[in-house]
Image (cartoon, rainbow, N blue to C red; front, side, top):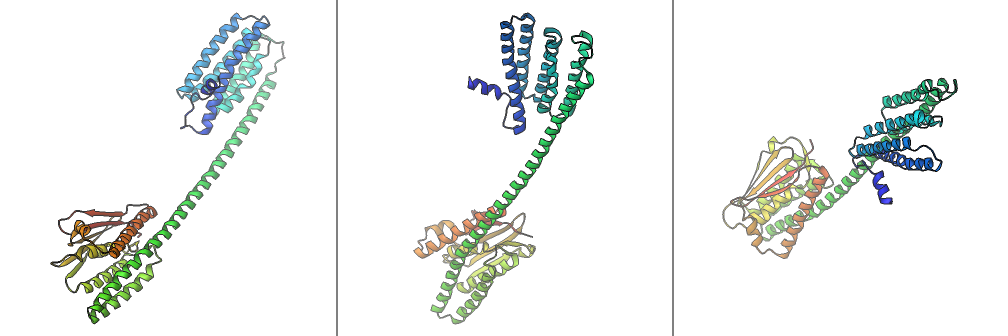
Length: 411
């Protein structure tokens, strides 16, 4: 029984509707259900008190048909039509009972209630006012023709005043509730916006801290490689080259320390550090290493994430070119400014597959793994931080390795 009752109450309710709309739908279902129960109760009373049932049963049968139509309109989502039809039906039934079936029983007093129900169910004012005027006319005019009550018993001015007063009071209350609802929704909207902004700020701050932590992991890795190179030159008794390398290294280290706390840096500052790094590598390779930077003059004065490009250049040299036994070791770096900054790094080294086959020392394995993992994690964080396309793509080439780096920039 409870399950059937719930099904009736939920006829026409869908999640897409607003909470207020679904409340009105459920309220009309309650009215329809209550009306159907009241028909049974009234019929029982008529039977117990020996009242005429013939005309009442006919009208009750018509009422059930009307109720069925109302629920059908609800189910097919003709909500406003269902509400207007419901009010028209109960006004019509009241008119028949008040003037034909049960006159002199004050059934017409229900006309005072119907405009108030209309205010609750229907938002359109012209419909509400039309129902108010119709109920007033149906309350007063039929008595002029049927003369159910003595003359001057029903005073039109009094009836109209009472009806309008009740209507105005409820309408004012309804408008006041709507105003409060709008203010509450507006406040909730502002609160939600503030919460979202706070969440984004918190996520950005967290991402910023993580980026700095990852960058801190990569910097010691670079320093370790540079010091190893200086040590190698000293062991080979190349004092002048070791001096030049150390001077350049200290300059690069000073530049790096300037930007270590920054998430973004000027493209040309980053380019300067890349050039110094490549000069360091050129000193280490003793003449058989060539590098070329292309298209960088076409790039605007933009800001980019720090320390993203250099680790990939380092990997290309360390795991591609360093193991190339014959011929010159070349690396080219091209820049393209689009929706994101694109950096294409291509070397003519041994390639990715061959590099995987070479048995490196545990130190190099660990170093490479840490560096690549840190870079990948940093790019992932940058993608979330800047909400834009960023990432790395390796392309197959006939010789060496080609990697495409995409990163956001700020004008």
